[in-house]
Image 1 (cartoon, rainbow, N blue to C red):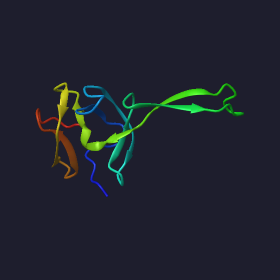
Image 2 (cartoon, rainbow, N blue to C red; image 1 turned 135 degrees about the vertical axis):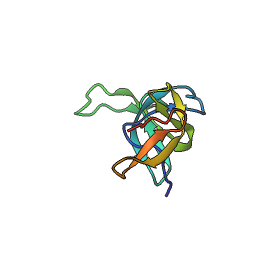
Image 3 (tube, one colour; image 1 turned 30 degrees about the vertical axis):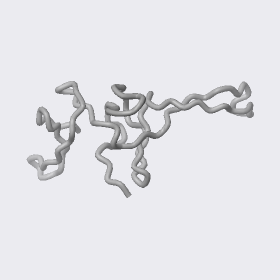
Length: 106
């Protein structure tokens, strides 16, 4: 079971692989396999037969999983991918901070 540094809804940048440099929102996180599904990254095509719900059939494109180590959290304040620091805020709760600019990410 892997400890994943990102969660669903985060905006990430792909840092390695065929889709390097692309940015997207995380749709799903699979902690057991250490994979994430990012919107618009690793698009896979699936050929479907005609069914009652989809009478036309055809080719369906959907994003496939990529390894969580290949993505970095995108900081909206410093406009670049960054590592995450976990620190306690004034209330004593853990918050994620950008290691480059120090601003809170959540």
